[in-house]
Length: 308
Length: 282
Image (cartoon, rainbow over all chains, first blue to last red; front, side):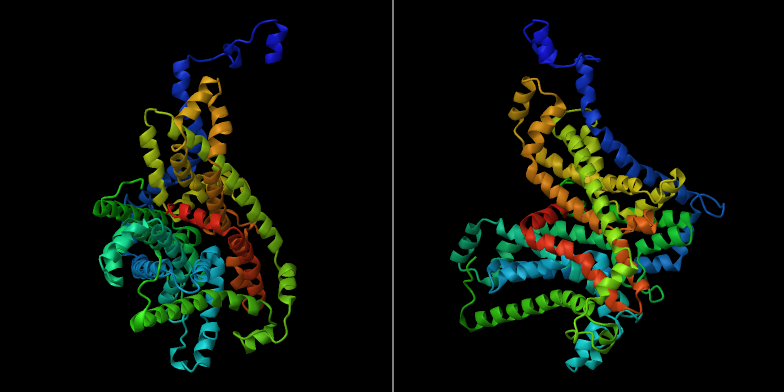
């Protein structure tokens, strides 16, 4: 462009740097953000807006040509769905377990412990392994003759050796244990990062005042962790309600005899195995509603800002 | 922090209890890795005889059988291609949108941003069935393009959130100065904002890459063709393939897990930061 301007023998003027405007400047500046947003809006619309609208439509249209809302009525009478919800409820026990363990371990590591650096690396290691791999290994270790029972028997604890995944009473708790194994490291790292950002003067002051270990953590450390703990509880709860498909699918597939079916697996089966789109859509919508209600109540109770 | 209380008999006892707890946890963490590795190196008979001990004769036969009997290299390649394409596209599209949110005041902007952020809590299981039906209708089931579009769409709310908050920290004067010099909006984004945001972009790329690499449900549903299958879907179906030949399955699990473990050990710092940033995704 500069070449052309020199050819014409003219001094380059600033206006020549921009292509001629098709629209008035005010229109252009109003349209500019929307032009930047367009690809994102199209993609998010295709992956979120369309499916959500379609779910509402499918859930209201019954697969047997019955009236509006029949899918929901059928759903709440389906004992398998209720069982799945019950299992999600039991698995929520992972929330307090993970939170308490992660806070305790983070505080121990923060205080300094012999070998702390190594423990940090190890505690975090499970996070790197994908859930299908985690499920594959644990599924084999928890077999009747798998690694866990072999060890229990070799140290004389034969009585504790159980059919961890084959027993209807134990399978769900075994899945819970695997979830805790693979998720714990993340909480520890999260809390440890927060602890390291607390100004050391706070601890010094409490110590000068003669606070012991328990009082120090009760009155200084835990209040400082409050915000991040709330966030972690929110995150783990949402995970247990609606992001554990991978664990259950790989470890037990929902068995034995639906002893480990969860809401997500129910949606997957109804939708992809039994072609019950109405039921699957209704279940998916209820699941989403449950998550949204939880998030809403959570923010109401904790008084936190939405985007925090 | 100095360990001021670990003195005296009570303190020593407490420190001992902590050590015991950490040793127990470390063993619990390490055991599945150990189990996977030693059994991948055993013959079928050795595995049946002893599942916990070292292999009496180390064999690599399971790995060669794995390569013979499964297209594991194809799965790897599929995962790499999907992850690469989704990461590049999601970061690029998110950068454009985040720049609009961070630097422009426009009607409906705040509302749209809030709407986007609230999508963070929508679980994939809710979306996957209508998306599958749509893909069937459009005839794009078993195409990588469809899977990439879905991945990018799901990654966008978090990506936009992360980049918007980072772009807002860039001093306005830098952008105004460039504008006075006649730089276009895209020019400012590419030459000023993006280079200043390198740490955020690296973190985002890591988070998104991990997510796509480990994703199971969408790949399971949208890429059913054996030639398009991803590593995670292949791994998830090992059990039914190798039910009588577990050591081969163990070899497959070892091959599927080493990239992330090596990446973690090598780039622990970025990895941790990436995961912490990723925590904001539901």
